[in-house]
Image 1 (tube, rainbow, N blue to C red):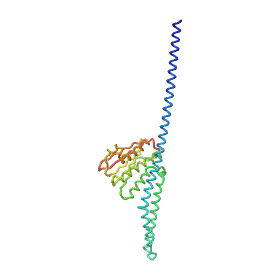
Image 2: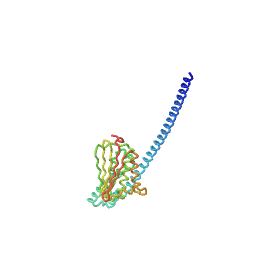
Image 3: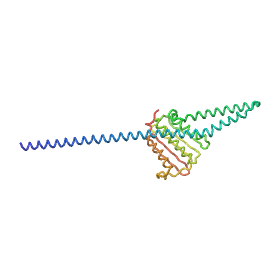
Length: 268
């Protein structure tokens, strides 16, 4: 009997220890899970705030860039058109019937052109234009503005059936496109800009190519490179929406930038 009692006691003690260890394990596991879950929620909230902050920054930058375009367009084109219309009106001579009709007709055409140009400019006053008209039309409008400067040949090519991306993602893609075009205008010494849009089944791809002087990509690895910071900023924005960003350049042969967005972010 004493032996059996000892075995029972040992069994009880062992069972108790096992239960205590199991309880401690469960408590530790639950504590660790809650801590990790809390950390996950914090990181998710931080990502959300970062994303929302980036969207606000993107909207403001798009509007700032649009205002620059509008200012330049009014000064360089619409202002000149209206000045010509004013000159025609100021030099009208009622006694010269033939020339009077000609000047009235020319003035009507000039004013009509100014009105049309102003209407086109108004499309870019709000980022809603991008979400309402779609990315392709907004990009086409941007290229048309650059083409009207007379300094560049611009081409927009599309493949596949166009669809809408998530509207917030379209804003970021549009801003990346604007930044690339700004870099081309400021630094590339190019004459031709080609934008290619591929609406694929699995991905949407935006490609921007110029025939400028190109540049050495090596300095991009240096934090002191201002141009490198700009490109890294575009790359970060692409990552923010789950897109791939690739830039390639050859000295004397131009530069190409490609942004690839998963089609899961798209809607028909």
